[in-house]
Image (cartoon, rainbow, N blue to C red; front, side, top):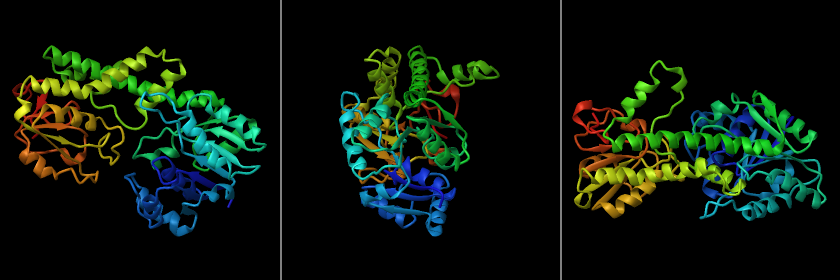
Length: 404
């Protein structure tokens, strides 16, 4: 085999699709993970989460013998290249936890040797790649280090890994050359820039998206306060008007990246990121606004409410940092009873969809799952996404819709 790769965190949302793609392209890939249930699932050919087309591809590369999975950390030292999907987490104050990253990397470096290539794949605090390279040299190791951020949309990783340009932030020319050669297997175009620019590229991308969602959500709140229909306004703004074609609709901006990366960028700039911090207040405040708006129309204190969809986005099984859970927390204080349902997330506290529809007095849409299209519901629905069809636009207020 021309390339041998060990992916640390290899059974997660970033590592596993990349491992499948590299294996399919001819590399020999070892997935290293400490989650026993995920390791067992992958070894048996079952994806531990939803990813389009991955079930078939996983079975193929396992059968071909190009992909293996292990919990043995010594696997790190047995491959030419090591790809780490451990990013810089943030604490309860939304500040980067560099020490957590350092401890994780320390256990990896203990098992590496001269001549290997080390690629950081997840979001890291700007400057971390160069700092890691210095620490490696202080250990007396000669390892090539690069930051090559992933930019895929969760659920579409296999489709986008080979089609989106791959940013290569090598600390040295050798690291850049080797990382480019590895990702060339996937057929992706490479864009070579310095490591700190590669780190900022990922943070800028996610912060830009997060701020764009906040703009739409702020406009939604303004429209609602004055009794206007935001979605009719948005349709009028964007129809046959190219300069507004990228304007998103309103909705929950959740998930494990957007808020976290926006706050990392703020921390990097010494908390002088007013635009990003304002976006956080708007996006994180949307669940509370929806509940307050519903309270103006319904007596929630005597009502059973249901949240349809708890994943952070539609047709997904990932609950991480989903604003539907924040919505549940607010509704727990404001309503008599809260029911939650989701076709993709296994949670013993959730109820089947038919139970939620039958028992709820008021429904909130939490995630735009395809399973909710065409629902026949004759109860008030709070649908910030404008995902559920309306029976008659003039029969409902801007805040509610009746699913038909």
